[in-house]
Length: 84
Image (cartoon, rainbow, N blue to C red; front, side):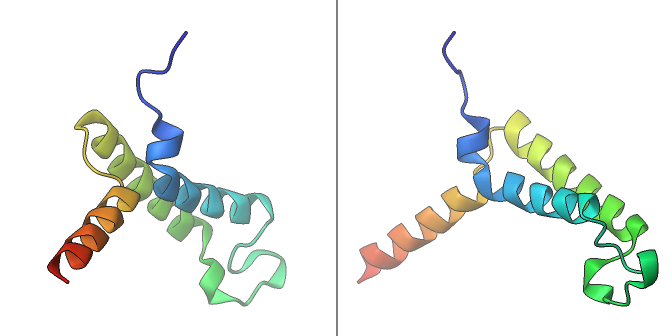
């Protein structure tokens, strides 16, 4: 069976951001867990909110065929190159 859409390739940047949060949760990087005082890890509540936002944005992009972050960057670079 052939792929209709290569979601993992096209939306690699968005998926990587989600995987980063999930890996941090898996590794126990949570603010306040086991004495972790590093606020950059975020609380469980913060991480759940961020995951929900990122997943919702990704689903919207996929459903409506919107450009990925990589597509946006490539278009910006093309415009800059074309202007020179």
